[in-house]
Length: 134
Image 1 (cartoon, rainbow, N blue to C red):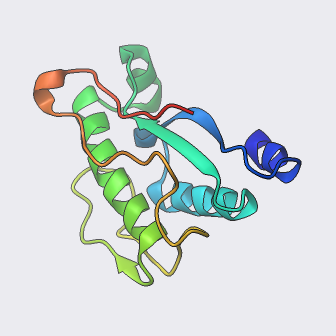
Image 2 (tube, rainbow, N blue to C red):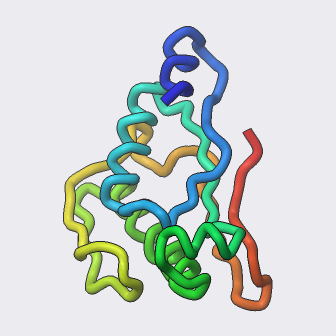
């Protein structure tokens, strides 16, 4: 949340923190945190997302790399929907992560925070993440 503090003492600089590793978060909670940070930053939030890179990370969370990739895709769909739609609902989860979310929520700019990727890594790319430059 340091970026909220930085945004509070600046007017034009865009703020953000490296990479959010989506498979390690509950997408409903993460969408709420991103939305709140975006509001507190007056719509100047930059984010990057990824699926994780090292086997020991997946081991610590008790998931496989395949589940991590599925959670990334699913989590991005859920988070983007929650941040951009007035009344978003998501069907049954395809990856074991969370219950189907339904929540009226969106960010301050009524769009996704800047830098949200529009493309997902393909299986042929192996260990890949989607990120932005800050």
